[in-house]
Image 1: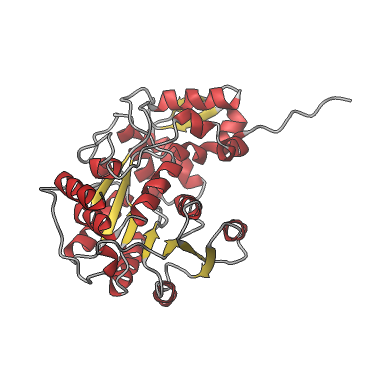
Image 2: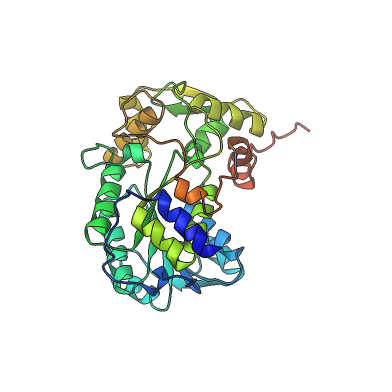
Length: 349
């Protein structure tokens, strides 16, 4: 049955650009499953979800790469089944080289609002290839990815993907849509004023926004496939990962308001003023402009840099993955409720 499935899946990627894999990995051979998977960085939002998702799947040991073994987030992850904390830093190559020893496959996600994004990830991918470790990594939306985009992290992701493809590295890039978690950047404003200030009106086209937990489950699904099926994803290179249902930003905020039980509305602020505010909060201007323009592109107020698919890759859905969480599921989650629940008003004596 597995051989027939592999054949059927190969038809789905027929015509996709195939790549010579620089370092042939046994992990891409038929019938080979991983025993140990490295997750870097494990304390990142999606990284933590990947650790938890893998822990729920029997038979694989997870090495969770963290900067600080005493970080409360790391300590919580260490309590999960088959999770071992590994101290390391994506900016220190020697620690990554050590962390890759003895693992079969790896997951990679790193901070997008950072000028070292490209160097950090390409160093990791090169070291992983030398160790014959295939990598599943998080990119950004296809519509933001390109060599000439003014979206800083879109340029970085394009460069990282091009680096991997040009060298034939065994890498799968997941391209998720707008993360539902992005609203949490406005947590203080939501609780304090009941508003989300965005440089767009929010009533644009509906898009398949995605819960980070669904992106993590997609990564875990690919990472735990037998080698011959994993090799199909390596050949496909980029995989679309999108959410359950479509909505625009205004509809997203309405769902959040309903789940919280208090009014929350989207508030329009011109891009220049919005960028100045973000800079005031400490975000570098280049990334504030990039994030602001991303909001406008998602909302249709600014043109995307390329096609903007809204359906997940057939290859991914054909191995059994489907998005699980709706926008309401996300809004009702413990994480969102904990971040945005208002403290009760003090009662007069």
